[in-house]
Image 1 (cartoon, helix red, strand yellow):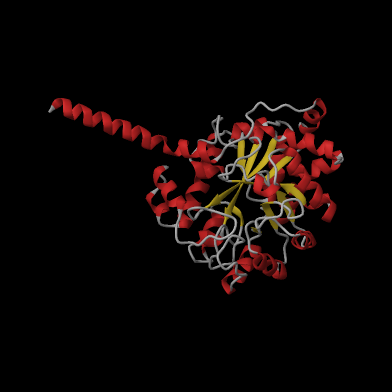
Image 2 (cartoon, rainbow, N blue to C red):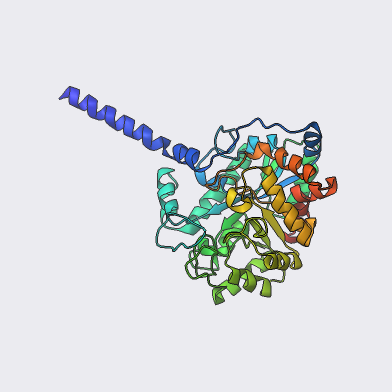
Length: 387
């Protein structure tokens, strides 16, 4: 009997150890890089890169349970690697629901892989049943990282925060910052008034939809790809009243048009590509790019293959060049989709590869400064709450 007990306990220990490793195993599998650091570039590219104020409009790094204060050897983003890559500001976006078998053509809302992820990553039980609670939990985590960083990392919630932080960063280039965003207004759990709850938690950006249609509006990969609903129009009004930024990434063509028809404030498309260089359902048409630019908005160019139709910095810069030639460099930004369950050419320490490719593509140093971050800094100073 004693021998049997020992065997059973041993099996249970092995199973328990495996259970605790599941999040890291999933993270390894979902967030790959094609080339590992350290990354090589020309002396000219490194010299210019060190002068840039770099801002990336989209990463899903909070989703995976990683300690973002620790430098990891897998995935794409953590706070030490942001500092190593000279990234001044990273938008941390949270998807609160993700249907099984995601694709860019058609998804319904009948399944949800994030519920399973929440369980294996041991999120609080309330997050298993509430999308709003998932967003609140992850906001709390980012604020905890900031508190524990002793000033090395801050969460930006206002234009004043951003100005104060950038002034401090001039004296210490290792400082970095984050801004909270949400993929899909289904995170409101059907209640537009939950915007106040999420605003108080620090969220300053949100998209109407993610991979499926919801009660706010349609998704590019939804079943019916509807436009804004009546509730969606109220959502836009309430977002603007709070100086929260509307993000049109993943939105259906009808939703994009409907938002731009009523928006009184500029929008962003945080992570996307251009159909002119990579023609698929996920990317923007020329008319959509022009409409976002006419609104005063920004278009974040993604790094993964669906956005760029390539596997390196040259493909990313090709899309940047296309959008820049179409509407001007002042409307172009970085939108990596790091840690978004995609394979990327490099992690965030490899952004110098983009700087190098932009130089080779003929972008001026001023344009590189703009696209790599100054456009977003200007946008946020004008569109975040003042204080």
